Image (cartoon, rainbow, N blue to C red; front, side, top):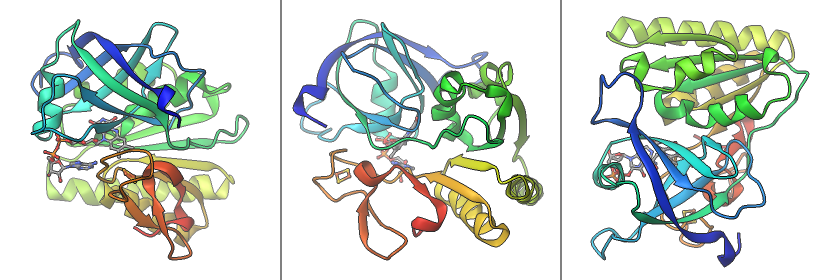
Length: 261
Ligand SMILES: Cc1cc2nc3c(=O)[nH]c(=O)nc-3n(C[C@H](O)[C@H](O)[C@H](O)COP(=O)(O)OP(=O)(O)OC[C@H]3O[C@@H](n4cnc5c(N)ncnc54)[C@H](O)[C@@H]3O)c2cc1C
Ligand code: FES
């Protein structure tokens, strides 16, 4: 990424996702489109509101969910100080954005493709579905803890075969894991492609089942990041050979057998 890719852009809209069931927790933010040549689903941006002072030094990473000539959309779940302050931005505020960063998910138009999303891990799959030349070859599975309309699920379920399961009680987790295993086995048998995004335990489950069942799977990691461009080493993981790899530049997407989790 060149310095040219860091731009101050205007916030166009900050809107709660869905039917306002969790108005304080999930937001869709539209930003004025920086002058990018292009982007690919799986890539991300770093955002730092220009109003942040030294008490909030580091930008925060978010998946690019959608983009067109005018705007760039991201979905945010408020989990801490940074996301709370990003959620309180208003139309007209200015943010520094650098990106598009990192690599992207594999696209194999004719291959049966299973998207496994854990919670807000659904965010990059909106762009994936919208850019895919054959969405009829895609199935989406969302495992979620909060009400379904907190997530951009309905939008995707209009375009691709979609399933979801909620985790409300401990026994639900067993059902979700069993369903993931069944679906990964199905796609392994069809020589399909499996793409996963979600919290680390979710990624570990996908990696373990892919290894056991011989499936081709990619996992997108959400390590803590500070610089987003490979310089600070804050996001380092180990690749399949045990070497250090920056998630921001070598990832965030890794083949599941080529990364340690
Ligand atoms: C490549 C990438 C893409 C991402 N895409 C999205 C997205 O599309 N939407 C979205 O809502 N979030 C996404 N995240 C996660 C998001 O960056 C973090 O939730 C955010 O940086 C937390 O900032 P905070 O200051 O609010 O939290 P903090 O105050 O720093 O932390 C609050 C809590 O959140 C946890 N936390 C902080 N950072 C992360 C993280 N990276 N992953 C998991 N837990 C974390 C902390 O351990 C702590 O418990 C992505 C992360 C990466 C690396
Ligand atoms: S976030 Fe700085 S090296 Fe990855």
